[in-house]
Length: 315
Ligand SMILES: Cc1ncc(COP(=O)(O)O)c(C=O)c1O
Image 1 (spheres, rainbow, N blue to C red):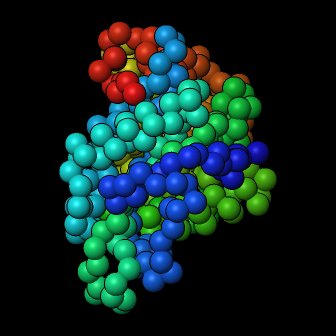
Image 2 (cartoon, protein in one colour):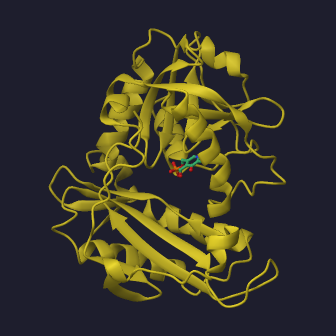
């Protein structure tokens, strides 16, 4: 079962427009422009308890850079610099160190606030950061044993419809339609194809497969996919280990006959896929490469791999 509606821990504080305020004060007006039209950008970032008991945010700079880029794509004027937002994320966790001793999920969001209404309106951008405790996005069992996915009847939008380098609030309606369709049909996650019929990404994750020759493939960044930070982490870890990764398009049936498959994402981390459209993938168990990637990823985020220590920002 999906755990996307998992319990949201009520933290003490949030950061909104430059101020630390109480959780219950984090409200916006009903006339907020983004609420009506979806003009917002956001990030999902995880902080992990490291092996030495500290708290470290994984690839914080890259996430905030993507937030700035997403806003730039939308012509959404950012009232804060990248450095100020990086600092605000760290400070938000530092102020709630005990609450988040075990780890945290950070959600910065920037959106067009209230003022004028209508599609041509340009109102001041509001920026907020919340943090909560979010467990395994596709469930602990999914992380361990793999999940069941279904190719969606919804298509990932064309690159000239979706701004694919942006993590844009309104674009998630497409993801939600696909996710709900899959869950209502009894699957854990949806896989979306692009307008040409090639595999793009899951509703909130990037996709990797290992074919029977042991070749690792993931759709290229010219596909309508988010440039996932976990995707790039995994590509780097695999290539550093001497394995070849091909960034190429592939068809849905390539997944059916794959040896292994896994999803990557900040929320979903490294989640093996054991079945697609009722076809067992490989042995139906997380494969050797999937397990290697998952183990390595968790060692990296927990500060156990010196080589990748530069990806961690300690709180
Ligand atoms: C549509 C989509 N694809 C891929 C990803 C994975 O991106 P990342 O690894 O940066 O979290 C996400 C999650 O943010 C997403 O929402």
